[in-house]
Length: 205
Image 1 (spheres, rainbow, N blue to C red):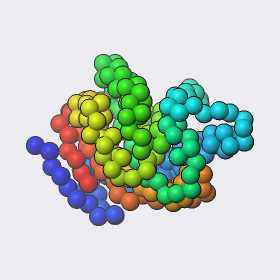
Image 2: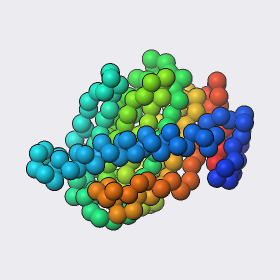
Image 3: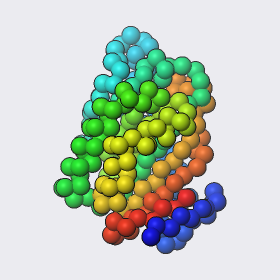
Image 4: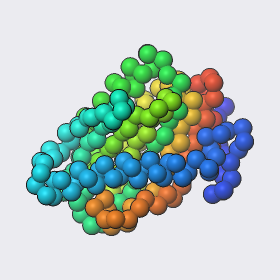
């Protein structure tokens, strides 16, 4: 049976290395890196250099590692208002079958953003050592919960993740004055899922 553990800001379980707060700084830097990609794209749009079509997936590679970005609502993303963020970090155990399912589900998630208008953008970055990170920007907590409760997201989180990942770390945070400001992401809380070597799953908060 899964065990739910509540942790303070500086606490972690030595038996669950994914919950070590020492990982936070690297996570913050990577979220800032993905945010800078997003800001750069928005600046180019405002300068008239590019046109961003809502829900279009942009894909490119850096050092043979793939990146993807979906701007769901360019107008909403440009507004000067507080927005919420979700940062996902997953340590893959990886098999061809689970990778195929994850790829299929992510494509399905990207096509379903139209059903969740509060999601403003979604970024993914492939990392070395079988890690993967995502950054979602949305308007408020209700939007996040609606997206999380969707069929495709539940399938990815409940059915595929325990088999595909050894551990998952999800940060929730805020970005004051929006993406086009110069503010940094402020992390509010973090959730952990440590699946270990077998896909049983133990969530740690």
